[in-house]
Image 1: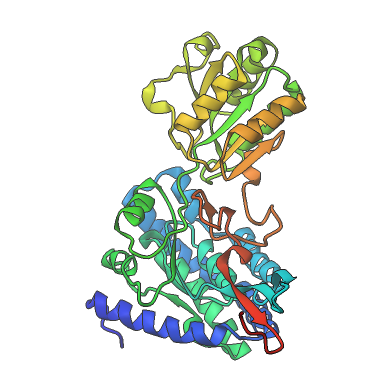
Image 2 (image 1 turned 180 degrees about the vertical axis):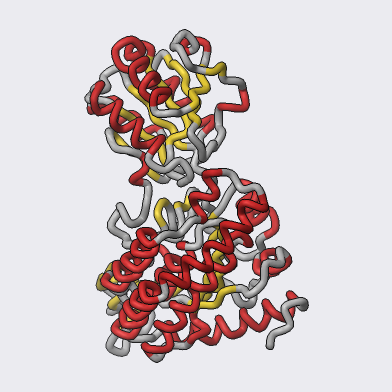
Length: 421
């Protein structure tokens, strides 16, 4: 039995085991990884009653902790969501194996034949809050990319994550892969997070998935490289050339489909020329749908709005709330997004291709959309099967982080006795 009170020793042991597993996974056959994920999917579905029972404990914990409705929604698992977890595992299993894929290949006049090929990162540390499905997504994607992974889920999802992790271990065991390939930190002690951030001897990259507080902590304290997943301060700009029907449907879906996900719209910018034709109708529809609209001075004339203050710009509500502002031009919209956005996902609604081009060119968010709901900011919707998160930094992994983004590359150089002059 591990001593769960000696956190440095516990994490060092987990790290050493992960490093050993990563060495084996680097050359594990693609068929074995696929079989492990398919077996894990079967195990998740077979254990759905046990997972729901474990999740009930977490929901009780979350209520006692006073979690918001949005956080409780992220935490909750029912049969439909468990089916989604199993389907996500199968989708990752069915993907092409990225390890060993040739990215580029060329010959040199000096007699060298050079290939740049994908290779695993090694050991990935994933620190996440609330959403227990991340246990499956992160475990699956890291395994597919040939990486060992150390998972540290949020305290509120402790029991759910353990139940899902057991299914992943079952899959590894049945496929003959090292069970240490996917490890879940077995304690709620926050000291484990701080320990992970400095485990440079064992962890190659940290992926944080959670709120501003968690990501800020990771960025401040990490000595291990980080794929930053910042908050989703998602903007939608309704251009003067927006189609009214598209604008109404997209904005309502982007805000209300699921308010607690990082792709949910948090700020609506409306061109002044579209205010009477499109904007007011969209604002009224949001209010009718139960959304609290925090409006600037120009929009406060719409019945049911509330006055916005400075704190409403650049705020991630994760709730049935949205900030709304009138702008005089696309340039003003872009300037607002640059100032208050988080480089996650931003959208323009317009029938003017030049306006869309300008929006796409002048903004540098990880995901930019044109006439599409920001709720599509999701690895599954991008065809990646699943994702660990949406990376908002400038490292090689940006946007949805799937299996391919969890690899690096190396150069393979061959020749026929070439020597340098």
